[in-house]
Length: 298
Figure 1: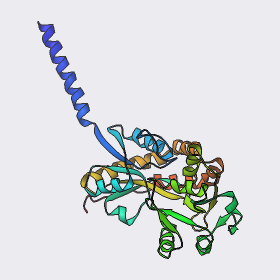
Figure 2 (figure 1 turned 60 degrees about the horizontal axis):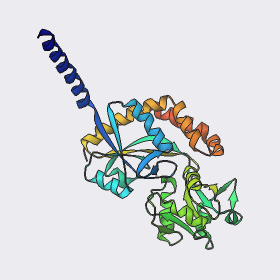
Figure 3 (figure 1 turned 180 degrees about the vertical axis):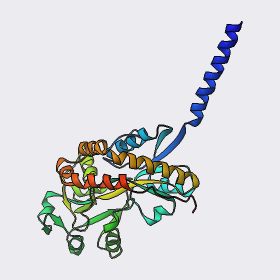
Figure 4 (figure 1 turned 135 degrees about the vertical axis):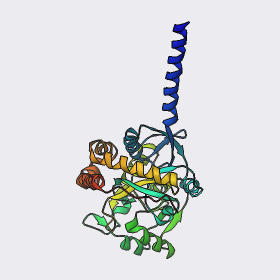
């Protein structure tokens, strides 16, 4: 009888410790926008991609968080955050509109956006020092370009693209969540050029049937790395989560070998070689940066 009593007490204590551990585990919901090469989605689930793999490095630094991934369009992510939902989203460019609904945590660097054209169109471009100018593109009435309505473009060229669209020099089209349908339209001769990242085009090329392969040309006005980060809802919960993620980001950046290995796997070899040193410098700056401050108030 005594043995049964002690066995019962031991089982109760073990259950209590186990229950305490479960209670301490938190759920973190990530709103993931499908972006080829960054977040590849199959049957509604994220399976791989350069940014998805980078997020796993953060998860390893935050074992107390259970990561859940919801595949959503960007408009739905912004709506959920605007409704003060407990959600974060990775793979985002910072913008004033998104700052109104979320706290931004810089995480990794992306290689710059390029202009994508068919081989036949390449001969029509004015290329100087291996780059083409936005002013020249927008001043050429014979080339049809387009912007993706669902995309936020890098800050250095955002205003120029918006101005060109307002002046009728370039179209804005909807379609797929990440705008990769525009790459297909160039390949199928419905457009002459679009702006996109090498890693996205490489993934689209792997999985879609193209009439013509495309060629990536750097832009003179956008030659630097682009900071990509995380948004968490603009609430007290989001402020605290952003602080924890910022700490984890600085820890991961202090040991850049794992991040660089991810870039090496996903970037075209010539692109990785060109930006190798810039990527290392980015991680060094991010590791030494002061902790970000979030108030938790609107």
